[in-house]
Image (cartoon, rainbow, N blue to C red; front, side, top):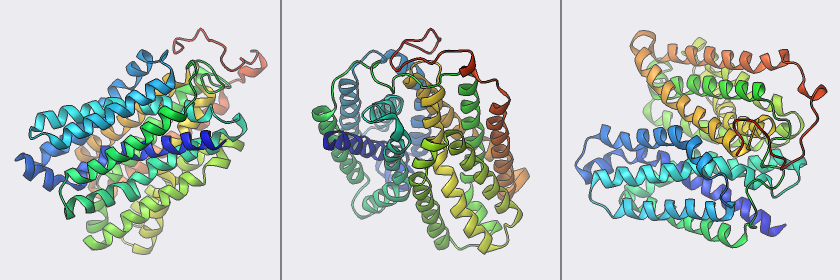
Length: 399
């Protein structure tokens, strides 16, 4: 039991490291820009390029590596992260820095596809949701702890130092997984295939992810503009409110475990519905600061669990190998981020920051109705015999 718990802790640590690495350049824009003598927007491409690489390559890489034993695959993925990070902090070339970031992004694309089946496969199915939450907490802590701490450390020293620290944490996760994760064929175990595969429900989950995340990031990308111009908060207060948002997100993920075990469909629907309420209320009461503070907390509480809840749902309904389904959901999530930020920027002059929160609320409402349409689907269990874990499927997503 201790060995399995250590592996799950290492996977959670790796999630923290990857998510922090993805977003940390945002907090170090000026330092990186000055060091490489490039524009701030060029540094922004380090984040944009990272997200696009994850979105585009998640499914192809999951297909390519579907037969690779997971201990070896995760060890290679983390080794790529460590080596590419070392290259990024040692180089004086912006283009080598960008290329190393893309390599890390490709490693992250594989990691998010296989991490969850590996973690939940170590424990009985009855605690699947709680295992999913433990692995996801690391990723959530990147927002509230990793990026702020890394930004502070970089400002006190140089931009390379926080990335060196992250590489050390990644090396620790690598050693733990390489030594303690049992060797098994990737198609073995109850997490390799979904417990109730259904292509129709799977498609609805992907649609829910894309719509919900697009709405969230159409608003959140411009949250500073909203808080300062519409709600009238000072710049210093905005930093505090973003910490509230991040802390509430961690609380939301932690509270999700038992819910997705007992009522997996509700575990997805509830955060999407609450996010719709929070975003719409922030638009409606944008000039009432007390309401805005409360809704920022609700926004964080509901936004962070969406990815975790949908990933957990994919483990139930994916019509083929779960890592392919999880990769598709990760791609949908990253596409939602990119489209949301783009659409928000396009409509910002016409709608204003508060209008983007209304747009985000409406998109999450649409996501909720997409998810609720699952109730209209006939139950396949009455006409199909259940498939035992590890049994191959003829679905196109299977390997």
